[in-house]
Length: 336
Image (cartoon, rainbow, N blue to C red):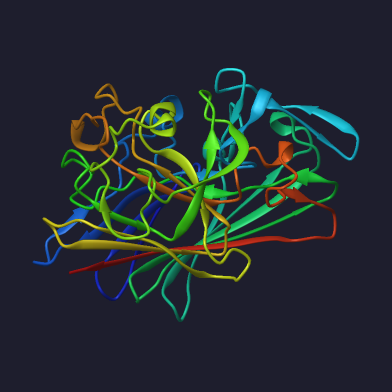
């Protein structure tokens, strides 16, 4: 396994492993110029192999959940690994987060970059087709961590790649993220059942705890009496983003008042999974021996909608031979 460090002209630094494409650390300044590592993670590789939260990893072939770990494509039935109860989550038992990627560091005009590639063989975790995947991380001099994804297949399959960093803009070891102020440009969420599987219904966010169209502290309504909040418990939902299909555009902003750090997210994708770290419980020992508490980090995972194979009304996750899957997501760091 290898660890690569990217550093831009502003002093922002990202350490990325070729194991799982994991962003192991990400150091950014606060309003006083003090640097802190703002992503949750581990000090040693073995912990990434055994612990379940997907800290910092690339996720595939399909991010999020597929109901009953099963889908049908072109009349053929496929059984996937059931690794989340009876459902399939984040690519299966050994998804892309647990693979060794070929890594090539290089410099670009925009900033230092790391290109990772992996060939997923036909039948891996139950998916059909050989899938060739290339993901490039670029740490731009404009203080962006840019992810450019590309994939191709030799037969019809499913693809929904995403990134799973847990952020805490105060610092990875600084407690709860409930005071972070979040904006998500989305009018609806994909409503879920008790297994966090979409029902197929789009639920309007207006008048609900899911309305982040203007800045709201993450913790302000996280304990509200709401059926969807109860399913979480908390936030673990896909937001149906505005202006889907219109290319790379801003979709979310986070502001942390005490440090002044900001995070802006732009993506080409139609969905954004917002997860508020509900299942962290203090049992996971992270970097520096710090135990990550409940709501110790948040995720903003740009993606297609979860369980797309069972909902033809959702954006399709099907990739066919001769087509190229492309996705770009940018995390931009700043301060106020």
